[in-house]
Amino acid sequence: MGFSSVLASGVMMSTLLLVGASLIYTLLASVIEISEAIERSGETRALKLSSQMQILGAQLKPDKVTLTFVFSNNGTVGLWNFEKFDLIVSYTQLDTGQQGIVKLDYGKSWQIDLVIVNGGRVEPFYAGRVIEPSEAAQVTVALPTRADPAMPIRISFTNQYGYTVVYKFVAGESD
Image 1 (cartoon, rainbow, N blue to C red):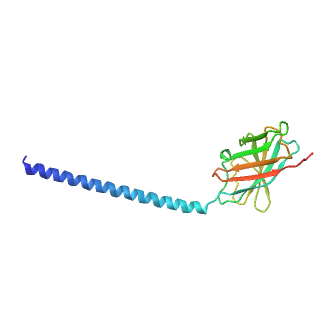
Image 2: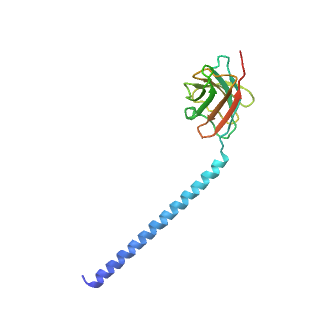
Image 3: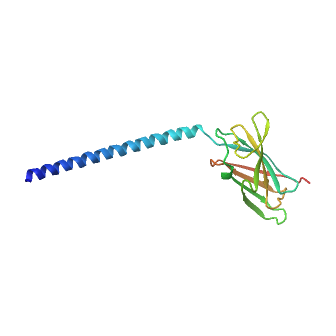
């Protein structure tokens, strides 16, 4: 094998490497461009979907341990993954006067009792039920200690999408 054969093989190998590198670069650039297009598409879609809630009519029951409120789904997506919700209540403990802040677990410390469908019709709540946009749900909460009804109670409620609503009220004496 002569020098010209070795040189020709080297040139051919270099050409193949350059063509291969060029193809890989083009492929990567295309993947990045497609990825950015998908991301922009997702951002546009996310702007159209929203997850908003409102808390209405919170009450501390006469036992000073049971708290009820209604949350409305004012967004455009259904609410269903209640285990992923965060419910935090801060209140003054009646017996000690200390400020209590508790994170309550769905199914243990709080539950959904019923669903109020658009138009006011009331339906029972069952496992797997989705709270659709324009619907509301009544929640019952069991606080770990009695709350002082004369002091502010603050409810912080975050849904599975990360949207948080805060509601603050004073129950007043209900004896």
